[in-house]
Image (cartoon, rainbow, N blue to C red; front, side, top):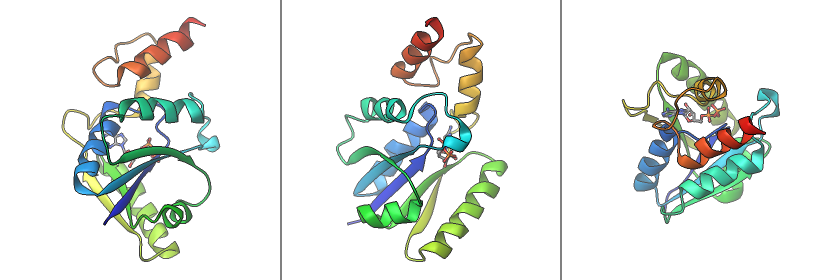
Amino acid sequence: MTKAVYPGTFDPVTNGHLDIIERASDIFDELTVAVTDAPDKDPYFGLKERERFLQQCTTSIGNCEVTVFQGLLVDFCEEVGAGVIVRGLRETNDFLNEYQMALMNRLQAGEIETVFLAASSAYHFVSSSLIREVATLGGEIDKLVPRVVVDAFGERLES
Ligand code: ADP
């Protein structure tokens, strides 16, 4: 049985992330989506809120669970018994960062393999940071993020 972890900040989850989650859950027997706190990035949404968005969007995927994690990713993978880290690749900038991270993780734990899934063409331009920028300026994001995220921006911007 192959268990995989898909880690990220998910601030907030986008349809690009959900596309990776659906495809990874078809490939691996079990998938854990692991939401990082990432205080250095000063996230717009809180950790528990980001976890809740993901939980609400993945209820129909039987082999997928969502949780938060702190500390080294490879330690978390070992804790949950995962041998694979899943990451999404959009364009060349992603590749450089992701490749560095994959090599560092391999150095920490050589038995854990990083697997990259190419972003779908419909979402390759979508990033959480662009979504935050457009949403907070009052732009249209409905086709790029799940409903729960559209609503959360609405509530946050009204308050
Ligand atoms: P992190 O801070 O770990 O990069 P993100 O939430 O930004 O967290 O991204 C998590 C993972 O999802 C990364 O591997 C990133 O490349 C990937 N990703 C982000 N947006 C998309 C997208 N639109 N399509 C496919 N993969 C994506």
